[in-house]
Structure formats: C-alpha cells, structure tokens
Image (cartoon, rainbow, N blue to C red):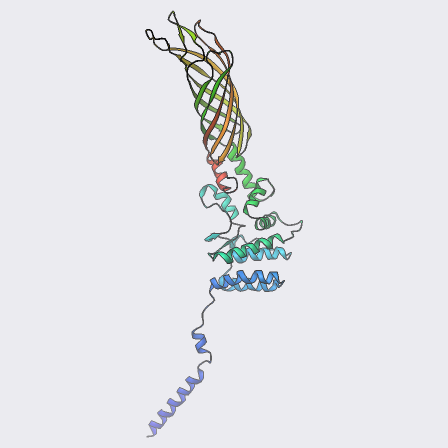
Length: 391
C-alpha cells in the first residue's frame, strides 16, 4: 500500500511539472512561417516609393534593411540603396558584385556572344530583379526613373555615378544616344563603344551587290545608243580604301547600223551584246554605320559581240573590244546592319577597235541602283551590341 501511494505521488508531481513547462504560445510557434521573400520583395516595391514620396527616407532605408536581412542583398536592393544614397548626398561604392544576371532584365540588353563585351559592361550598372508580376515591376521601374531624375549630382561626382543616374533617369535608348555622341567621356562603356565603333568601321569587310540601270553614250558612239546595264560586284574594304571586281552585261539592238572589219570582210550590223570585266580601286569619302559615300576609279576590258542582221548567208560572231577607263561615285544606305541599297554613277572612256569600220570612240555614262550586303564580324559585333537603337 505504501509503495502504491509513493508511485501515485510521483506520477502526479511529474505530470504537473510537464504541464507547467508548456509555453503559452506553443500553438503559434508550431504554426509560425518564415518570411516569404516574394511577398517581402513585392511589399518592398510598394513601400519604398511610398516612404520616399512622403519624405520618410529613414523608413525607406528600414524596408531595405529588412529585405536584405531576410532575403539577402540582391540587385534590387543594392541599386535602390545606391540611388537613395546619391539622392541624399551620401557617397557609397557602386554595388557591382550584387548585380548578377537575373531572369528579367529591365531594358534592352545583349544576350548573345557578339555583344558580350557591351553586355559584360552594362550588367554592372543596369538594374535586374527576379521575376515579378508586370504591374509592380513597372511601377518600381518608374519610381527608380523619377528617383534618378531628381538626383542633383555635385561637380565632384564620378563618371560612373553620372552614367548610372543618366541611365535610370532617361532610359537605355537615351543612354545609347549619349554614348553615340561621345557624351560620357572617361567611362568604361564609352571607351568600349568608341573602340568597337572604329574597329567595326575600319576592319576588313567583304561586300557584294547587284546593279541594275542604264548605259548611255554622251560623246561619240551615237550608233550604239542607250542600253540596259546589269551587273554584279564583289570586293573587300579595309579602313578607308576598297578594291572590287565588276561584271557588267549590256544587250539590245544598236540605235543605228555600224560597220566592223573582220578577215578582210566588212560587216554591217545593229546587233549589240556588250559586257565589261574590270577592277576598281576606291576610297570611302564618308563612312558611318548608316551611310557611305564612295569614290572609285576602274580599269577593265569592254567587249561587244556584233552579229549581222542581214538575211543572207550568216557569218560567225565578230567581237570588238576596248580598254575601259572609268571613274564614279556611289552612295549607300544601310537599312539593316548588313544590308544596303544605293545609287551609282560612272563615266567611261572607250575606243572600240573596229579594224577600220565605224569609229566607235568617246565617252559614256552608266547610272544604276544598287542592292547588296556586307560580311564583317567587327561591324556585326558593334551593331548587334547596340541593336534596337541604330535599326
């Protein structure tokens, strides 16, 4: 009996101690959840602009601190803090190591190898964020734009600070315009753009085009008359100079009959199948990524196949030829990074050897429309790096 009473007393005592040690908030502790970073980020995008607008800058910093504590620092909080510091006149290092590539880049950016140099530079000052719904993301982007626009940088501001503020305040295209006009000197992205710009213009470039137009005598050679002129050109350029090979074909009846001697026979004909094979050397008078104005001088062989039109016994084809010395201008407009159209005009000096027949000596002009393309890795790197601005 005594043992039973002792056992009962101990059981009641132990059970009472266990009940006494149970926390009052055990249920809330067992159902507590950690902060959801997506919710924290969404609320941060909402609260930071609000506190800034009502002038509670310290509260905006507290929201950023909360986000950094629970969700780790990232590009969103880092660049926001950087801009807030500039707005408040505080000096702070640029948070390049907090700006890796996330899923949703804001603004245009180059994602492929040809523009990797520009991309590697720009990812250190562009703002990236995790995937978010469209509305809050755009609203916060608009807030950053207005925040940057309100920043009054001192004269002692660094070139990077000026670059970042201009980028966020005016947008990517405006930044590219400023870079294109060399308006951000002593910045890495400006130096890189200048290097790629000149490299793309001056490196070796292959090009080719089709030409369609007219060929017309202007002094002498009235017998031949105007002809349709079709051709193909291919060549290479380097820095300010280029060389190219020309092939041209002209066809159609001559305006008046002309005579050709061949094998002690005199032939009278109005048939005309002419052509040119020649070489040009030229220089770019004006050369940008959108337009070119070129001067060229050429030399080549110009030949005509003359075939009798008379109904009597036919004869074998008789050919006459001339040295073709020519010079001209062409204007090209690039409507795509590697495609262009333009116009070309040349003057030709000719003296066909008719072996004592009709004198076919004088000058002619050719005018034609051009359509073609280029192949240049350096040019493509530059243009693709700035895709969306130039084309």
